[in-house]
Length: 474
Image (tube, rainbow, N blue to C red; front, side, top):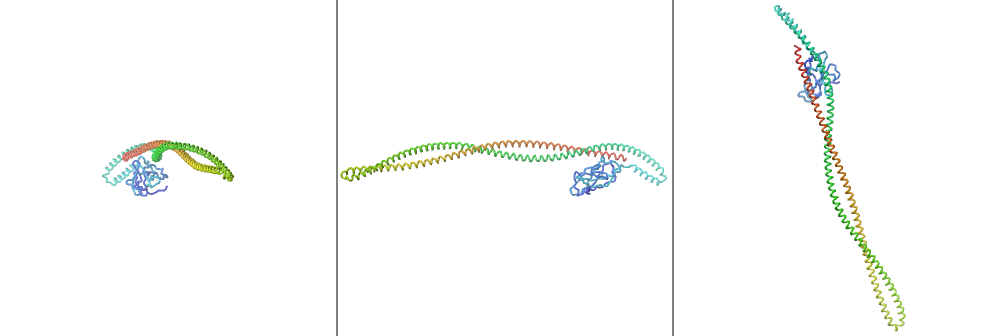
């Protein structure tokens, strides 16, 4: 394990008494970043792992500590946790948060005080003084020596009693230490378990905080989604109202269109009747025309017969020209009759021409009227067909809009129900997270109270050892 000399221990003694608390002075260099998880351990010399400590204490934050500056500090080891007197050498070791060794002290031991050695030293000094003293003072010195011997005997007896009491105290201390070791092991197990639980609770708390953050984000997204759904719902309702207004307008326009269609149908019916009447008139005109043609044919036949008669009369006139004298009166009458026949023929021809011209004009007028009526009828049929198609499209569009409106309403109901359920679930999760956080805070407070109680017990044990040590020395 590579050491970093960033912590130096100061004023470390060679011998410490386990009945009193031990102060450990040290200096932290500016290169070492102090952490609240740093600790100082009391290790036997020859240790191989940071887990081989006899006892340890936390390296509390030094007074006026600022990162990047040298600082001095002190840690206390209570007598209740110190090792027994013996030849085993120990040393202080500063361990950082990650398990790195940042500094070691020199070796030292723990031993009990020896008042008998001091007493023998005093006796030798007094003996030398007696040898150098005068003979007159010999008796006084002997008496003093006897008194001192008596006092020494009393001190020895008192020392034996104190040693017996000390052995009893040591036995009690041994029993108490064994009990304390058991309690310490149990507390260490409990602390390890609590540390694990704290880690688990910290992980749970971080998980819950993440979940809480996710819940907040989800709640914000759900609220925005809900506002968006509400705005979409309002837009849908506005569209529905607009569509209902369009449906009412379409219904009114359908009524008007039906009325116009009825009027157009009546007009078409009247035009059909008029066309039938014109057709009957045309047929009657054709019949009259045929009759006129028959009459013309009869007139032509009469004309041909008249021409034949005129030719016969001419022949007769040629025959009778010879008989001019005798038949002069008959010729004059025949000429008059031929002129009359010619005049009648011209009149009949004129009438025939006038009848042909009027019949042609009437036929053209009937044809033009029939064509216009046919065009109007086709135009009206096209308009009726387009109107029916437009009405059919409007009905289909209205049905589609009604179906879409129903779907949007159902979708809005479903989404609103889902949003409410998710909001309720998020509230329940938030309450659970708050309860778990309150439980974790309560457990943390209990751990702090237990730690303070253990420190108070250690301070009381140190005070008791301080009170007992002077009695033992006396």
